[in-house]
Amino acid sequence: MRAMRSAIVLVVLSIYLGTSYSTVCEGDECQTQCAAYCFGVLNPCMSNLANLQRRAEACEAAVTIARIALNDRRLETFGNSLTMQPEKKNNSQLLLAATPAAGKLESNETFQQLGSKYYYIEKELRVNWHEALDKCHKMGGHLVSLQSQEELDAFNSKFDGLNRYWIDVTNQFKDDEFVSITKGSKANFLRWADGEPTKDGKCVDIRTVNGKTTMNDNTCSANLFFICEKSIEV
Image (tube, rainbow, N blue to C red; front, top):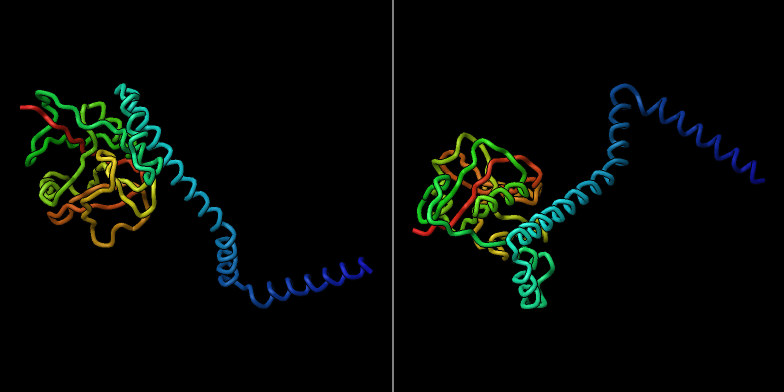
């Protein structure tokens, strides 16, 4: 009886497949149906890959911040900040609070004054967001932390073409919450370009189009120019 049922199922399946391919799937239509089927199979896999990429970027940011804290010998300060934070804050916010503030030097020829702040604009080397964070730290500063429209407008005439430049804003630690790595808190100044953020990335860059500088979210692994900021004692 079981063998008979199996045979019936196989016959019905054969008839169905034969009918499908002979009467429905023809020419270009067949290719379209196949593509749709493949997309349906692969789409969950691609979604999982995107989630893994976001988690990897968040881990990389945490590792970079921790390494900076170690290099600055700020472990004791970092430990104290953990115990003093309100219980509401999550671990990612605690890690953000460990990022060192800008170093103060008497002079630095690589930094130029724009408005009331000093910046270094990298126009030759393109790196990902985490590398930019580290490079600014090694220069004694940090990724630029924009706090007002005036500070943003200072770059209106400083960029070449449509090049993009990393700033210190990211939402790698919590979706829909953009934070300033420098401040260790929610970014209080955001000026998005039209249509942004598109949620296609976890890190923020700026660029100038038609004389206006605005912000865009981008994939943290993208290689872009960057801007460092530093306080300089006069």
